[in-house]
Image (cartoon, rainbow over all chains, first blue to last red; front, side, top):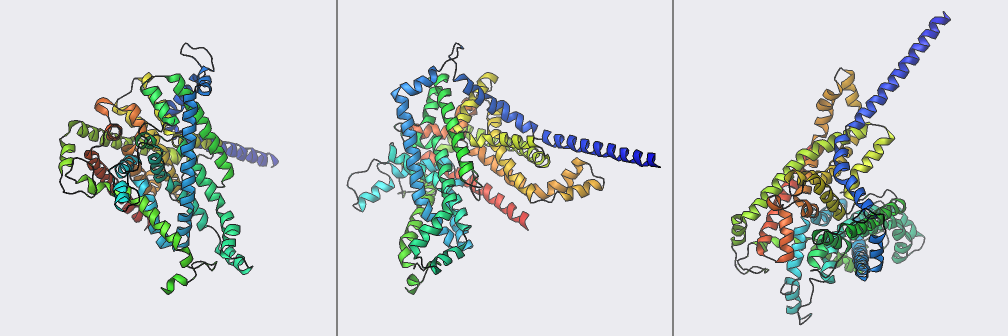
Length: 302
Length: 272
């Protein structure tokens, strides 16, 4: 009798073992479905990126060296490039925050229906090609462009302003591209704010201004930090807009990497610059994932 | 104008004291929309220079575009590359998303992280790294090279869209099908696929657009006979401004809008 029980138990143990083994096999089988995509990304992107990174520590002859990084520190031209990149990124992010916050605030106060309509306007730039938009700005901002001719007709200024092929043009173009990236997370976090908290603040005697600063603003901060970080990260690696609207006068890290490879075939310098850019980007992404709860690169609605 | 003195929010602030906010919102919406749309009327200008509003209308810049061998070749390359990217990225991304979603393993998280890196790494580095790999693999300036590079950028998007569709799908339905005797593959094609097909379609449309709009990677890996439209446009924008680009831009806007409208239409159907 007891022998039978034991036999049954061991049989069911065997069964359980077999079942869990089956499940494990199945899970690995499922995982293997990702293999083709992973292989493609590994072979064509991740291994080459790692290789570039590795190469930045070696000379062309194959000697371990820090010369590529030394150059970045010592040559004033690199200091200028880093400064420009930083300047463009900080200014763009700042302008986007200052403009995006009230815009998101306005949208968060509307009915969902009206807000969805406004959302189309915010998302329209996402749907149109980056080149088309850059081209449009080139046309609008040129000496005989719409902005200059209207400004002069209205008597706002008498000479055509230099709006393109410089920092001003770059910033206008960058802000146009980056604004949606900050409005989306801001709008998301503002929509989530419990309105009764504002009523409570009003009940307790806070005026509109006070309840904004002490209740609304702190509650919308996660959205703001998230948006600011996304925009800053995207700005650091930007290429097309500064290249076209900066007219060769606004040289950012990306432009330098491209010209190092395109014109000079200088892989050493390009790989070191790339490594710095990559480390900086991942560092910021890591900070973003810690600072902003539920942070995602694409914000809401993308 | 009684409306102006009514409170706008729960915090007793009136519409009148918030007029600046409305004005700012209008200006910003104009700032976001106008630059894109202004290209369209400009493309019909008769003038050799860019002007807005155009003094007289003509189709001459469209003619220039359609009569230019290099623009036509670039357009063909872009369409071919985009269509092939759809063919590569959509199935690869879909089965990866399905597999990763069902593999309850710690490794799966790592793999999904690796698969989304292409959209986190600065594009210029994606461009240089792929160029570097292609120099070794002798794939620079080949159509297949462009397609694989664009697929790398499209796969994360496909994975994100399909994963979110899988999350709203009840996996028990698949279990039921299998307990009724369907094999895993049959269950996938007969139960799972019909339910996520609109997400896959959206993913396909976005893969197409990812490839069609991509500039920086194309700049590095496409060239010669296989230059993409965006690569040539970028080169033209750096060198000279020519209204032909306005015509091309207008057509790009049309292609994008039509595709997104289609995706939207299918998306609506899937909700019903």
